[in-house]
Length: 310
Image 1: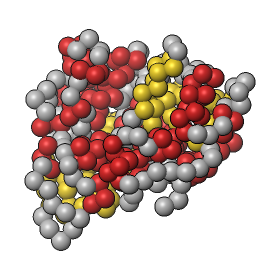
Image 2: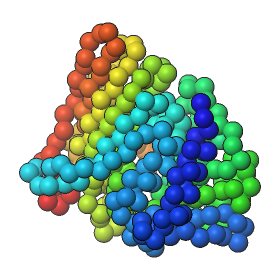
Image 3: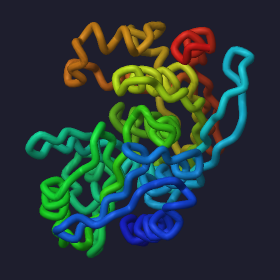
């Protein structure tokens, strides 16, 4: 398979070339690392958010925005489809890199993870990337600086001049879109954690409403997770049946029905106290090739309307 980082860098080049049109920022640090601002000091927009999600999936997913409804109100949705779910979703898009450098804290996703390859999911998939350029997208309330770039370059064994960091706030339009694009990834990861072989995933499509941009990072994290847990829908085409498909959806979690604002407050915003099963799509359809078709879960538009302030 082609390098995830190579394909993502092509999209990064596109972002830099059309930065003004996309309303994003792009600049070089003193150590020659490049920072792209998708939603911190720049507003970004719908197309910026779609491109950010494409970068996060290593160029192996089709990402589109469309219009839909939540509780009768017109709302934007984001759709993601990939025929390479084990690579695009698990080895690239998953937010599996906790970036903690000096006083900077953020959550990293994107193909840079595949150059490190220490997460369990890489052993399950059997993939490790090799390329001399890399890109990591970072969800944080501030943009990464030189120390973060050096940290990423060190772990990915690249030069800082070959390191591209795309930053965005959760409370931004690009942030809402790129997080809404994670419904398919959540389903694929839950399956992998439950013991299903990710190489049996043939094709995965997901959709979720784009949460309205909130006034704070905390409210934005709650809204975007509500969008996935109560509005995210996923269709999976798989090679083998499994007796635990019903555990993939958010309805299988005992906290289902609680808005994430309440869930986060109960643990005092210490995400390490959360069971990962709480992060799941609302509903899935599983098409087993030559076998049965399963449907599990349900959406909750009433809860979404309350979360979104409709």
